Image (tube, one colour):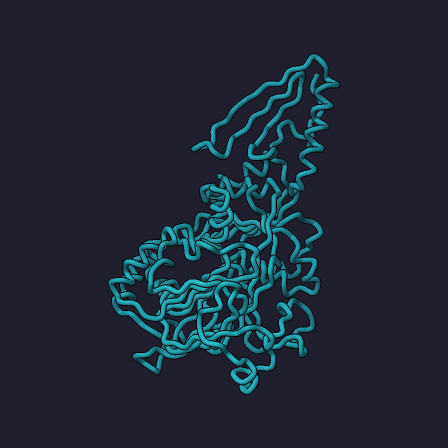
Length: 451
């Protein structure tokens, strides 16, 4: 005589603490689990026997109550990007993600992305009440699209509360790498999917990048100078896979560029010694940038949607550093990619961005410095300034050796702005190559995270 199944299926998978459990009810309760520490995870079986079917029903009820108390997602909306990275997202979903979701009896709706900004478009009108989370089987790009889609909704303040998950399947997997590495877990689709099924969550800061009435919401990083040039211009070698970054980095180091410009920033406590004091009233308001003080009135012509955190910019302790610069790199999470520990001290919800700045550096030292990106040791170089900032203003300029050419501003792996004469400069970008204002909203987003 068979007992009742918890979810109405013969087999069901669950997460109890750090183990995946499968049980079958008859006159016994069979538990199967794969410990996360196993390499690869090995299946263990335990048989709990009882002569009483009523006893098994009690066990079932207790397990159900415990699992329900964990807040596990039961319904997910899943984006799969078949074009990103090595174009393996569909295969990863079928082979790694789907079996775990099916065994855990998690319902899901699949949406393949068809073009750039497709995920953003879908999320803007998605009925979020039907789902317990949104998952991206992709790199960081689709996750950022989803974030931006949520924040331009009329109900953005409730929409942004839906947990977001990401399964690594792109060129850049910095967000999920940061999440899993924070718990000592390898960055893999298996571990990422288990973290989603488990339902544990963490908060993540969101950076609002604004220029006039235009907004972009960032989760990962902003780069200008060397890192941006490598990331974007190396696209011409995309056929090389991830090796394109190392190959093009050598080209850019030996043909090193530096850029005129300036940065203004509000240092986090302990970093006040960087830069020179700045009178924001004289530097900014005289230039007509009154939209920077969002408490003074509307900063956007949007009828609805998130406009960024309300900050009295003039009341903050601003500092300034003038160029030229080799590289400016702002990071919200530690890892920029699976092999790039860009900002080793970055935290998910500290209300700060980590600034990695290079003003001048001999080419041989720069080459050595770049090899330290794998373990984060680059921030110890005497040519690197590494600090935390709570707000930031970037005023990009031209190349020092060619004033007819500008640079590239790279946000979360995509071009936010291009200067004249750069790679694909004729293509339209969201913002112009001019002053950008960056403010941080602490813990605005929610991500599925390992326990």
